[in-house]
Image (cartoon, rainbow, N blue to C red; front, side, top):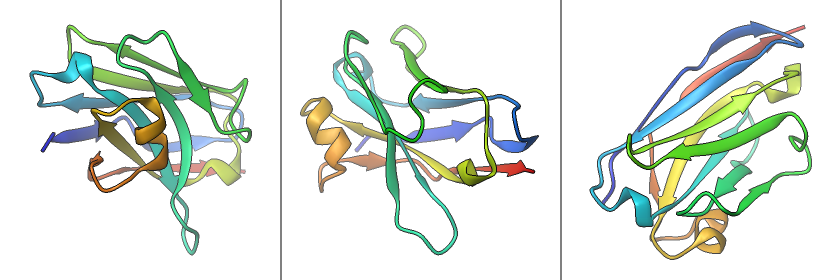
Length: 125
């Protein structure tokens, strides 16, 4: 099981930016596909962005395309989510996820996915 620790959340005004980080414990980090999900109050958890083990492939939810960028630093065992042009509807707890079976598997968030504890993002209008 991979241990994931998110950081970087906080309160920001609409139009502002935040960068989330997720540090992973696994020595095999460079072989893991990583993703970000979010869950707003009263809503189901939803996919936000994902990145393959090499960083060569990324996927985004339509709602964040052009505003959010996912990246990774395999030497630091860390994945990032740069969030720009934030909107109040981006308010949620953001979770980091890891899966060793490829980007499709981490996007699906299946039973073999490891999860972090989440970091709160609040965007004020």
